[in-house]
Structure formats: C-alpha cells, structure tokens
Image 1 (cartoon, rainbow, N blue to C red):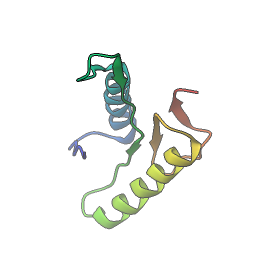
Image 2: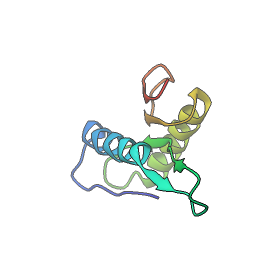
Image 3: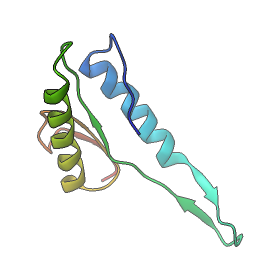
Length: 90
C-alpha cells in the first residue's frame, strides 16, 4: 500500500504512517474456524521529497523499509533514519 500525501512534510507523513501502523496492530480478525483471532502487524516506510524528486524518494523510502525490516517487525521508519530511530513493538 502506498499513500501520497501532497503538502505533507516528513514529520506529518511519519505521524500519519504511525497511526496507520498502530491501527493495523490493534486489529483482531476472527479466524474462520472460530478458534481464536489473527493478529496483523506492518512495517512502514516514510519518505518526503521536493517536487520532481520521484526517483530519489523511491530510493530513500526503499532504504527505510529495509531498515524497518532489519530492526524487527511492526516498525515505522523515516527515510534516511538509522535503525535506532524507529517506533514500534519491541
């Protein structure tokens, strides 16, 4: 899933992404066999760019996704951030 948020800076996009990640984490989906529920999590990457910097934005957000994946599941990572700058489940 991708969200394009015109007129939104990196911090604003990060706040929205974190709300989406948290909402996904809180989902409880009943199993079809009625034996419990499924828990879903997401790793989210966030990037921002000046108009016309599409390729750079894609590269930076891909890097952020890989950082989120390396640091564990259920994370939100800003493009350009180190893995120490993540929010999510420990």
